[in-house]
Image 1 (tube, rainbow, N blue to C red):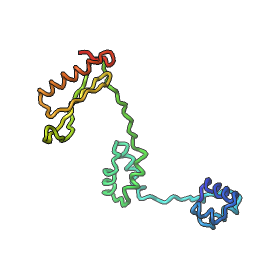
Image 2 (image 1 turned 90 degrees about the vertical axis):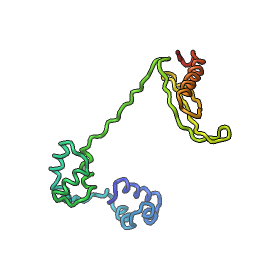
Image 3 (image 1 turned 180 degrees about the vertical axis):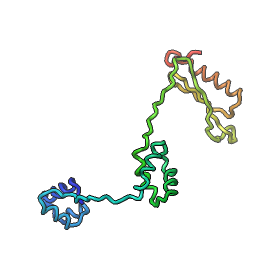
Image 4 (image 1 turned 135 degrees about the vertical axis):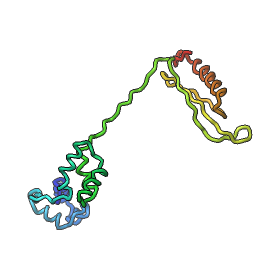
Length: 188
């Protein structure tokens, strides 16, 4: 059955001089269908079908609505339950039925943790990979410190992550970051 928009498109193409064959190729409809709607002066009408085809799910809908009201919307669970009751249909019908009853997840707002200038810095180590250092391949790590207020970063590459290196990296980071006191508001 043609939709109203397709009906008007066919009429418009015909008024522009297109042949029925060309319109049929363009729209994908049969030439007889094109001819039928070009001859008629009124919009296509849908045939009223008084009956709806019974669904295999119909006998189980009351049970499903009760289970959904109890809070069960997991279709796998519901499918197994109604199969035990004699349901012979497929999962797709069940999913289509349950979908409107599911609560849509609410988007969570993320609250950023902001700090005043000079109050916080965060640090972490990152493994960079194996690189040639002094003629042999060694594991390389990155010490990274980020100021909480300005988000200014300090990165230093090392060959280990021991406590001595950690302390040295902290001192180097503080020395570097305090070199810009007016611009980044870091106090020690």
